[in-house]
Image (cartoon, rainbow, N blue to C red):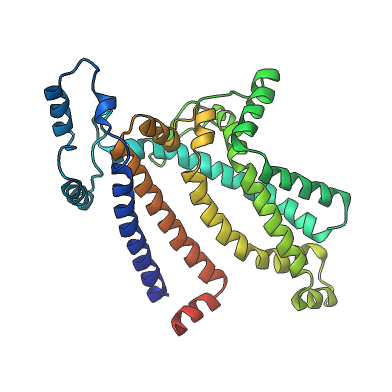
Length: 325
C-alpha cells in the first residue's frame, strides 16, 4: 500500500513540475500588463521604471528561474494590481470556493444517487423516464442561463432567496465559512444548485447504469434466492458495488467544481477564487493567474491521490495489479 501511494505521489509531483513550466511561459507570452497598470500621461522613463519594479524588464528565462526560486521558498510572486503575495490572495478566497464546491458535491450525491438508483431499478416506469429527461436537460442547459433563471425566479419573482453575496462569515475549526449560520445556507443555496446541476445529471446516469448492470449479476440473484429483503439487496449488494465508479468520478468532478466555478461565482457575486481569476485576467495580473492555475493543479493531484487510495480500499484488485506491474 505504501509503495502504491509513493508511486502515485511521484507521478503527481511530475505533473505539477510540467504544469509549472507550461503555465508560466503560456501566461507570460500573452499581452503586456505594464500598459494596463500605467497612466496614459506617463513618460517612457516612468513606464520603464514600472516595468523594472515588476521585474518585467528581465529576460523571460531569468523571470522563470526567479519564479521557481520563489516556489521553493513558498512564494508564487506578488500581484501586480494588489501589491501583495499572489498565494495570499488565492488562499484568502479559497474557503469560499471550497464551501461552494462541497455543497454542490453534496447536492449531487444526495439527489443524484437515489434518483439514479430508482431509474435503474424501474427503467420502464414513467418517473424513471422523467428522471432521465431531466438529466438530459441538466447536461444541455448552459450554466450562465440556468443561474440567471434561478435569480429571476427565486430572487426577483418570489423573493425567497438572495441573488448575490456569501452571507455572514463565521469560523469552524479555525476556517472561515458561511455554513455556520442559517443566512449562510440561504445565500449558498442558489449558486450551489447552479454549480451542481451538471454533476447531478452525471451522477444520475452513472447510478442508473450501475444499477441496471448490477441487478443482472449472480450475487444479486443469489441474494434474492436466499430470501433477503429488497432493501438489503439494494442498500448492501447493489449500492456498494456501484459506488466504486461513482466515487472515482465524483473525486475528479470535485476538482472541476473548484476549477470551473468562475461562471457561477461571477453570476452570483460569490467572493471565491474563480471571481478573483476573472478579475486577474481582465487586468493581466500574471502572478495571480499563474498562482491560481498552480493551486488548482495541486488540488487536482491531491484529489486524484485520495481517489486512488479510496478506490484501492474499495477494490483491493487495484493494489494487486499495481504490485504486479
